[in-house]
Length: 340
Ligand SMILES: [Zn+2]
Image (cartoon, rainbow, N blue to C red; front, side, top):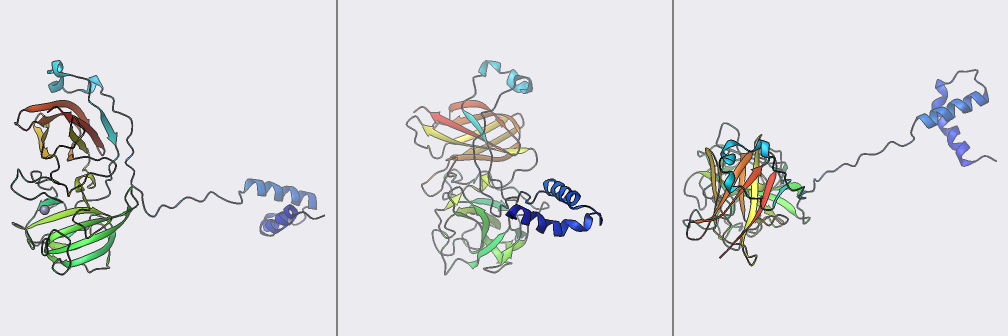
């Protein structure tokens, strides 16, 4: 009786036979066919193609502080050395490049960071401001499709019409941890260079710096939005998305009272010799921490190394101080509880 296996071998043999000696016996043929069949996998593993990267913000192991790598300025204050507060090293969602070419300013205003009020002078910031002269080309931070390009007069993207002036919103082929889509918004443009529905590549010119809408001078206002591209309440901190430059990392954290409530407007500093940074915890109720991190402050794109994290109390005095390490290309996450 002919089995299906024999039939399979016979079918394969059609393809293999040209390699056989013409005068081979049936047994030799069978042996050679069997040998080739075993040597040649019928099915090779099919790699899984991931078209839409899913963000992973999985906390990894807590860091190990290595005494030998502690710089001198730390050792000199060894009396202040305390066991590090809970710090996690996590991967960032660094999916985006800078919205400007290198010959222009690629850094945002630190004193008006996401969620801050510039010391009470301005309304709570839902994005980052990049100062550059009017007319400088604004680049897409990642591939995507233009969700909207034009003025926000007939269509609301902010708290009121004509808030962003001429803006471009790009939908990116990435999925947030919640399964929602991710968008970037570019506001106050002098002119857009793309049209709604157009596919764009990372680094492509999408418009030009201007001061349209509510803007004090020419700059780019960049936002990251999750889920609803038209909602002013859907923003996240772009500092967690812009890829740090080589050797740089990010500190993100949350500062709470002892009851666990997030404290707004707290002044925080990162201090290392000749390398100090200042920020404020998020204010208001319309800005958001990352869904997984739940941060309310970020220091982004800073040189890797040891820093003191200084947290100021409401009276301006020192409320908390701890040492932490910034890893290149990663996020150091820290949680601080302040006594009343
Ligand atoms: Zn802004």
